[in-house]
Image (cartoon, rainbow, N blue to C red; front, top):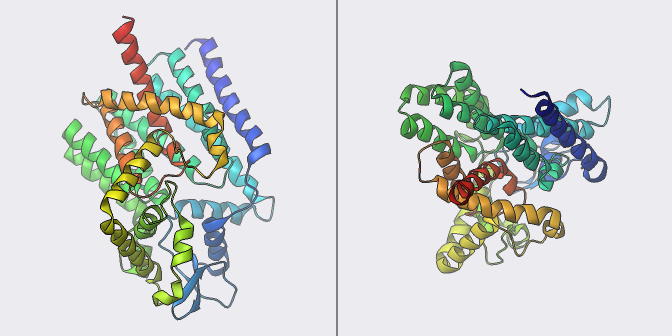
Length: 413
């Protein structure tokens, strides 16, 4: 490898690290909030990963429990990030500010993600191109900002780029070593524990690569076994508590938050809070409380959709547009900052055309296109938050690169 190019890669990693350290100084979260604060503190105080504290026979509220209160085990949130925070708090709370330690690990993971992303591109492109697109990936403002927030997204991006790296190696070499199959399946399990819906995209992936791409059914089943073993402790925990084999149970809540008469692209939590008194729902405060509550939300959302299907179909396409391009009605003022919105729109346009073009030929980039569009269509069923675009950022840059190459071949060669 050319020494200058090696130094350039090192420079990119140093710039990535420095940009996140600067963001830490100006923008970093300083304490836990919302569900993470409740989950971690209840796990620490009561030994139960739970959101809801029992108030009465038919009322439980999200809160940090007192010593004498009962905490219901939760199935609402995926567990991996909560356990990550808990372990750091356990080992560092008596030594230093453990929130800073969380951010420190996220900064390192975010920086290392840039390196893995470089390796993905460099498998098929020259060093100069790989460096350029890795730098773009590194310096997208929301990617920097997210690393210093208490959010699972930095871990998710790290796991995703590792996941795509193994798939890219397989698509080029046509061979998946047992070691890489193990890591691919382990990464899949961790991503499912981080974001429960990833199980859908995992099955899309293995069906594509181990059946349509190359009929390697043995790899298909080995991967499922390893992935299942990875998530099985938590599945067993959920079966023992809730009599069901699922990672999370929040479909109804998310569906109602994004599909109600007071519609917002980013979801409307206040509609749920203002219109449904939990005590009046008469849901028994036992271990099945969250499941029954989520079932109520699901039935309510479906009822709204059935009453006015045309309106909710229009809203669905509005969410698709907002996810693909830009949310025209965001309540977050920082969303419209030019540093965020300009690169987002440029990447959105390039990756959309790249995704459409890459659908034509069976290869790694056809898979990325399927992954890209299936994420957009799936999440638009619910609601769209600004950070969701980060889930697709590595895919968008790779598809944008392919579209730029397509234009070069079309008009310059």
